[in-house]
Amino acid sequence: MAVPRRIPVRFEDVFPAGAFVLGVEPANDYEKVKANAPDPQERDPNTGERVWVVRVLDPDPAARQAELKVKVPGEVQPVLPEAMPGTPFRPAQFDGLTITAWVDTNGKFPKQAYALRALRLRQIGAVRRTGAAA
Image (tube, rainbow, N blue to C red; front, side):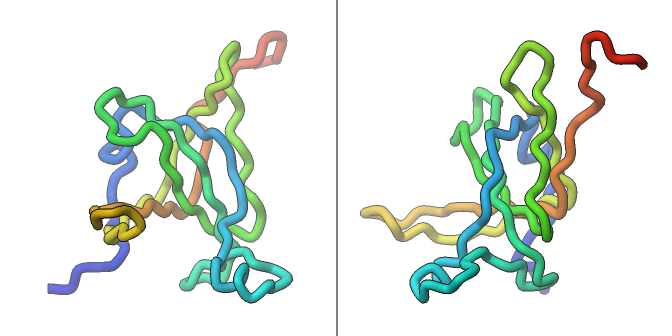
């Protein structure tokens, strides 16, 4: 049986209560950072595109972590979804979401951890604007 390194998962299974984008920043390739490379941004090994880290708030009260990071490839930085009117919350969905399990040995005791990747970040639904024509 061949198990892929990146296991496809449904957005609804990872974020059953939805997801809110907090910010987007370049993902650094730490080997390039240590070597003082002029462009230390991580590249996707399959496509060669730049990789971006999307910080996400998980509003599910049963979530183990309230803030997660999802890596998304793209030559340009993903555009933040628009905020819901009257709130700072930016609802979004990830297409092509995958999960990769790994062992985190940074603490006193090793623990199971997960890395999330997606093919695309997109805004959920249309955001209504007051005074805008429909």
